[in-house]
Image 1 (tube, rainbow, N blue to C red):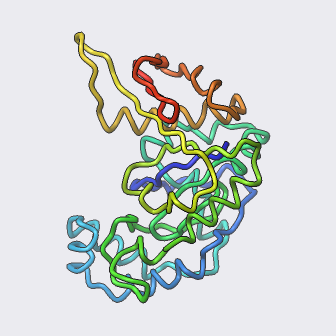
Image 2 (cartoon, rainbow, N blue to C red):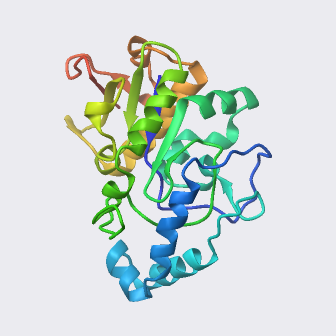
Length: 255
């Protein structure tokens, strides 16, 4: 089973990495092409393009100015430890053992607007670029067109390297899942939805959904889950499987 998650906008490069092991992103040359385009943007243009305030725009002007392709632990950090949003707080990879990091490296992929597809231990430098950004490149009018089928092809290779049957556990957001060409994907996709039960009603909140995606990723890694049936045992932080609301390809969990 291969898991896919979205990246986080929040990054943590203030603390040093707890790991000495690292790998390099597969599409580093392509990321450099995107960085070159982003460097040409003024703070105002970045603010409008990325839909961020002027302070964040200036921060990202500096990020892209300082970004360069010679990645090392001195100027970059492993992706799974650099991202610091709710998904990654739920995952809590910094508490993993060496064996769990090995399993994580083989069974998790992080989709990224700038880097395409990342393994957990791939080094990244700070950036901000959503996969849905309407950035003009030589490939088209947005980041989706820039990556084309390369994200799908990379996932297909990774899926073949993990256990059979070929399963893709989709814990990404809708915008990142759109970067995958489903028609060319060589795996069965399992979607997951998370809800909260409060005052007699079922509802959903983005912050809880994101954390739950990280928790489920942690559950799969710690228990080495390789089939759909065992996924139903997910019970972290009070979640339970709802068979009435689930289907063959969509699992629903409520807390």
